[in-house]
Amino acid sequence: MTERLHTRGSRTRGETEEESESTDETLSCPECDGQVINDEEHGETVCADCGLVVEADSVDRGPEWRAFDSREKDEKSRVGAPTTNTMHDKGLSTNIDWRDKDAYGRSLGARQRQKMQRLRKWNERFRTRDSKERNLKQALGEIDRMASALGLPDNVRETASVIYRRALDEDLLPGRSIEGVSTSCVYAAARMAGVPRSLDEIADVSRVEKAEIARTYRYVVRELKLEVKPADPEQYVPRFASDLELSEESEMRAKGLLKNAKEKGVHSGKSPVGLAAAAVYAAALLTNEKTTQAAVSEVADISEVTIRNRYHELLEAEDGLVA
Image (cartoon, rainbow, N blue to C red; front, side, top):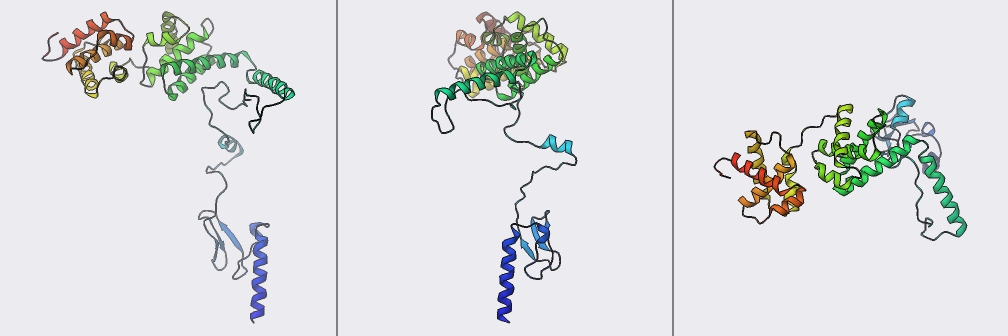
């Protein structure tokens, strides 16, 4: 009896070794030799006859999504880094490193360097096969450069890139420069994201004049029907206060001055940058923090005359204060 059990145990171990090489249909239960099935919902391998759990907590190596036809499967299938609108090919093409080194960091020989240079050249040609892609590549490079110079976050760059792609698809570029349209896209995206920059700040990092930026911006917003709200002066206050190294108390006081001014209608027809700069200057004086009109003017990129005029209007609107 013992010998028979030992033989049966040996046969079971042999079957277990073959399980890794066979399909699920050929597996058998080690207790009753019944059919073994996979319970994918619970991640278990169980016997259909006696209910023995042969394997638990199995790893599902498939995707976490489901697809019900080939088209949906192709759309959901993915590999590599996520796509981005900030690159003309959405980051799907191959990049060849400019450094002439192999995977181990060793320098390439003369023939290999020549070969890699030739591959880089052809790779670049295939990445931009038509004028539309070359246009897009240049514009997105400009958007990235200006956004970096202005310290704008990644979501603003994505939004600006999407706006430019729409403008390109709807043929808004003929008669206008690539730099002008890309700059107006950055200006619009920053305002839509709630981190606005003034036209003067945009013009400082752009390669086109301020008048052209404003004209192109109005055209792009009108044609694409973008929902861009008027800039709120309060959105400029945190940046100005941070650059001037003012306290949080001054920042909150400046926002209070602006809220009161909006309730009294003082902000109507006024530059939001000028109002924000004047509010920051007034708040610094009211909280006994040292700053000058010249310092605020430099940070806000606006004239001292404008700051003085808006300063008096804000104080006149403030209850209990006399300019």
